[in-house]
Amino acid sequence: MGTEHSNEFETITYEVTGRVGRLHFNRPEGANAVNPAFAADLRKVMLDINYDDQVKAVAVTAEGKVFCGGGDLKLFHAWGDDLAYNAHDMLVDFHTAIHLMNRMPKPFVAGVRGAAGGAGMSLMSAFDLVVSSESAKYTMAYTKAGVTPDGTSSYFVARHIGLRRMLDLTLTNRVLSAIEAEQWGLVNRVVSDDEVDATTVELATTLANGAAWALGHAKRVVYNGMDHSLEAAGEFEAATITAAMATPDGHEGIAAFVEKRAPEFE
Image (tube, rainbow, N blue to C red; front, top):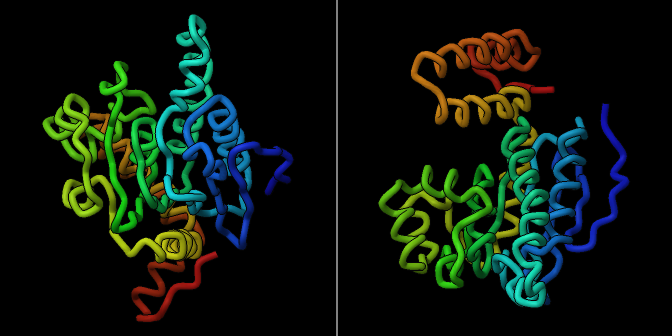
């Protein structure tokens, strides 16, 4: 069963078109920075997506010149002595949103224009696939502000690019160009600036129209394999592929391959 989208959002917009969820960061005047409202909106929209059976894939884009400028440092400064408490409260929502996104069996495709810095780079790295604009820049930026990484970057960025490169970005605040980010494995493909949003939606639509059960659970298989032993990874793979074979899409996909025709997935 699907679910009605009852949440009202302050910093994002969200709509469903066909089988694709369209999540759009919508606070360009604040560089789409992470603040308590954004973190809460992100957590709530992830619940919407998780419980909506109609949505098979999600396209994530942003309004303005910056995908996400990181933490809202002006607000953090204004918090004064309450900084640590308020930031911790915000991170409960922010990290919960990322955990929900990563664990649900639906692929997320992000389109990055402008820049992804600090928490924005951390968030970008947590999406399953990333389309980057040619002019985009990527930087960790945390230690430049006297703080340490958050947004699960220690999990995702390090796995995407390796420990040495992760330390380089974290300790030196090196700024990567889009081409460097692609070469390092941080983004999947680079397109012209004016093609980012369309390419992101097109890719999400292609995924949404594929074998949804298999694509969603293939995501789980890949992430599971990073965290378990060889034997445990193999057992999970065996359990998941045999479950996929029992679905209508599994039967259809195999039949279509044998019969040399395009599959018609549900």
